[in-house]
Structure formats: structure tokens, C-alpha cells
Amino acid sequence: MGADCTAGEGKLRTPTVAKRRTAPLGGARPAGVSSGAAVMIPEPPMTFPRALAGRLGPLVLLLALAGCAEPREELPVNTRLGGDFTLTDHNGGAFRLADQRGRVVLMFFGYTHCPDICPATLARVSQVYRNLRDAGDADRVQPLFITFDPARDTPEHLREYVPWFKANVIGLTGGEAEIRAVAEQYGVVFLKSGEGEPEYDFTHSDYVYLLDQQGRVRKLYPSDFNIDEVTDDVQSLL
Ligand SMILES: [Cu+2]
Image 1 (cartoon, rainbow, N blue to C red):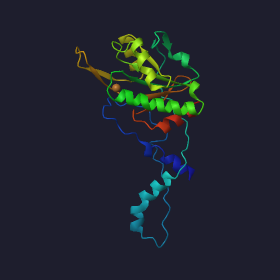
Image 2 (tube, helix red, strand yellow; image 1 turned 90 degrees about the horizontal axis):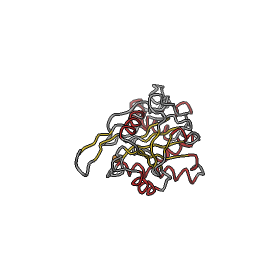
Image 3 (cartoon, rainbow, N blue to C red; image 1 turned 60 degrees about the vertical axis):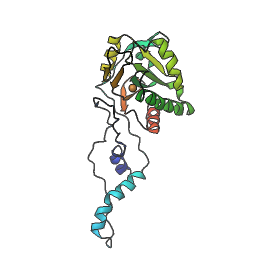
Image 4 (cartoon, protein in one colour; image 1 turned 135 degrees about the vertical axis):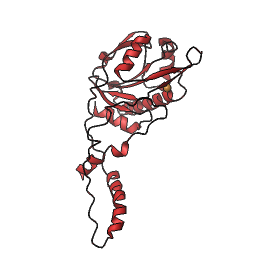
């Protein structure tokens, strides 16, 4: 049964695409997800009409997969995205990603004036963090929020914003070019709308990045990620 469960994992978890998602990013798919490994469906008994068995086949498969214990595969390293950077934290000090070695990092790019996706995503990240804190793992996990709106998201403004999420989030800002360079490293896309107006917005990609203790990207999640899944993934890297 174990082999069958492994082959099916991932197919049931294909993330839904958020409405405002831009450019899809590669490399997030765990190893083995796209494998075409066959899943055995038991032969029906002799008295079982074959036509009916054909129709029930997929149901039998779903039930079998639903009953599986979740196998824990090692998360693959994404070699196309990521890398160290230095930005300014919400206290105005220099923040180097390299200083986070030994911690698992959950990283999200956004802007504080975002009306929907950014605060909702940070709320989900903070829920993951609270789960980890309850499990005694909080001091080995660091949530980061990187703004791409440095004009409004100054260190002072971030210092007021991030505590709302009660998850020890470090808010990061910097010069426009610095931030753009980091966004490029991670394949983050953002596009300003209402340029020149006092109330502008961004259309942006909304992935959450899981970085391991060596600072390598191990997984990307859609902003409506499953909280338990991310909690499990973080713990697999601790
Ligand atoms: Cu947003």
C-alpha cells in the first residue's frame, strides 16, 4: 500500500490558482508528483459486473488514497530561485538573509496598503507560526515580509504593521533597486497601477517561499496554502 500512496501524493493537493496571480513560477513541484507510476486497482470479484467495476475504479482509487497516511518525502531544493540579500529591517538596521542560517524562513513579498491578498496571506503565515510556537519550534523559524512599496512602507510604517500578525514577522524594505533585485532573485513579479496617484496599488505574484536552514528555496506555496501542510513542511526541515 505504501508505494501506491506515494505515487498518488500531490495529485490530490494540486494548488488552486489565486485570482490575482501573475507569472507562474517553476520548481515548486515536489519530486515524484508528476510521475506516471501506476496505481493498482484490485481486480473485482468474479461476480462483480465489469462495467460497474470500471465506473467504480476511480472511486476505489480515491478512497484508497484518502485512507493513506501522508508519506513524508524530502522537499527538493529549488536551484533556479533564491539567494542571499541585504535589506533594511523594520527597526532600520541591516538585515542579511545569511544571518538566518540555522532557521527555517517563511518569506512573502507584498505591500502594507494591499487591501486583500497580502494581509490575508500574512495572517495565514502567522497561523503557521503559532502552530510552530505551540510545538516549541518558534525560535527556529523566521517569517519575513518584504515590501515592494518602499515609498510608503518605510521602516517606521513596517514597525507598526508587522506586530498586528503576532508572529515575530520581520518587515523588510530598502531602496527601489535593491528590492527589485531581491524580487528578481525569487521570481517575484509586481506591477504598479495608478502611477502618480496618491492611492496606487500593485498587481503582484503572491507565493510564499519556504527556505531551509541553509537559505535554499525548498517550496513555494500559493497564498491560500494549507496551514497544516506548511506547518508540516517547516517541521520536516527543522
Ligand atoms: Cu497584496
